[in-house]
Image 1 (tube, helix red, strand yellow):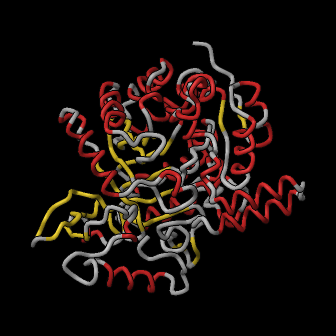
Image 2 (cartoon, helix red, strand yellow; image 1 turned 180 degrees about the horizontal axis):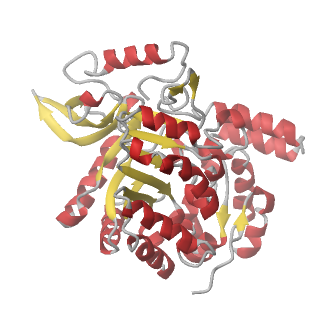
Image 3 (cartoon, one colour; image 1 turned 30 degrees about the horizontal axis):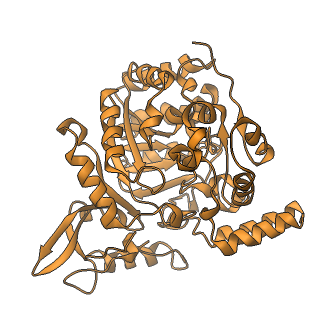
Length: 448
């Protein structure tokens, strides 16, 4: 297969999209206005292979990758539109947009102050350690993507403001940290997208860890990536594709579980020949591919879509892993569904597939205390309630403990829910202690 030459479309050349597609002038304007606040990048694969331009306004991948007017409030949209119409300076425009970004909760769930560990008396740049067994690493060179998802909860990584960004230029301190923290079994390379890095750069980050791997308790290396949706040539025809695949095999041959955490949001992303070939190449190394996606309006709020997505993944020997709820950040109001609606979609889709597809967990809310799954809707003591449980928790003892919230058809995230049968959820007092012990001056929402 001949390699496809990568072409990127951002705000610098967004008007080119008008020439390539059937996007209206009004929609081009929306891309410009919203794209100055929230990051925008598409590529030629997304544009040429995944979007139905005859019906683009209803196309799920168009909503997934192209900014929409309603992703900003009418007030914020008007502010940016007027700034552009008045040709304000780039510096002034950036300042205006940054004021808006600060109102969009850029770092939900305690990311900025509760998740960052200490090493030698200092916070570790580009590292998060929220759950006992898992450490996240954000290599600087991987803090971009082949294309940007409009819902991405890590959008602050891409807007050009260093104060909002998690990143580390090297991994030597991480290697030392892992040697000193044998409770950590899983290391997740994340971003951005680590698979935007070429082989030599990715290997540079891995080498310090690899040299001490036997002195750590690392049993799984995960790589979070959207490349299997947006640029599969990375594993097929790229100049260093085989080098990267050989590296995957080296990790597996060492006895380490290598898990590619792939993000597929809609079945159309699994429809091309190139994605199928990329999946085969990765699986041939001995790595596994686990798949995950949020559930969103405009993209996949349909049980038939989810059932088809899980079936296609399993038929390609991928493992359905998570359905997430929208994070409380960025364009959340455009995408979010009520918890009850999301659960109904999950349950109906789950009932349509065979047991082999039912490895998926969800809907899951990632919030400051942990990952909380909606287990069902029940009636207890004459009261309708939501049954919940932790999949992951800041305190591992919280995991798998069932608890209940009042039934609420409007609630869309954990902070909207009220406890049933008590004044507080069982973890709230301890979460309060964790919150103040970690950073007494942290202003982030403790339960969002």
